[in-house]
Image 1 (tube, helix red, strand yellow):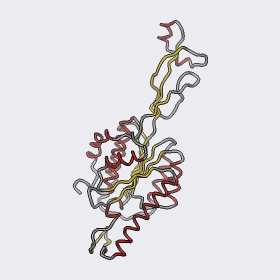
Image 2 (cartoon, rainbow, N blue to C red; image 1 turned 60 degrees about the vertical axis):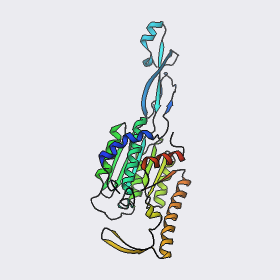
Image 3 (cartoon, helix red, strand yellow; image 1 turned 30 degrees about the vertical axis):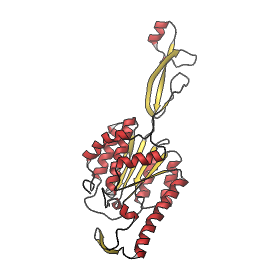
Length: 304
């Protein structure tokens, strides 16, 4: 796994160039007229000048274009165009089980690379980017901000929260992260969750449902091919931390159980996402991150 065992900040920053091949969606521009002839205050990039028209009763005097008024000897009002934005929020689940991979990269590295590409794509589209990085060492929240002020703190958190050694699996960590994301995400946000979704239960479903009622939600299911199917028949010594065991994949019952557990887990996640209209995309540790995103987002009409 050359270069796929740890996240490096320099690499995540360099992915900005690759993100030019990714689009999260077209900019949505809205021209709206209120009393006063200018757009309502709406969470977005702000107002930009659009055109001038003759003053109409009820227009706000603050929007009068005095230069045009003097030139034409008749009051004229400025109209503004507002580019509405969709804040993009990433949730990177970097629990200890994510530090596994048998091919190109660890699941944690895949999550970080996907997150960086998505973050830079949001920056390129002019959207604010923020989110949450959750790991055994703690969590880091980044409130949505424009350009590098949003994406760079996220990338730094991905790198700094990496462990130096495997830690114990802590039940309920994804549930807690989702609780925080529900609080962080405002209506209209695009929320992208990158995880292996090891924990599927009522808590996760409740939070997914709460997010999906007001936001676009994408669940990025990350896994290693070795989790989907066992290695060739043989006896293997496995270890995690201080735990050691021997696995005999030559036994039919072991191989069948291995495949069945993964398929059941995947189907449970698929059903959960269907119930709440959450977009589900999959990526494996042997995939190229950019290509995975291009295919996954296009499948759900989330990319242009």
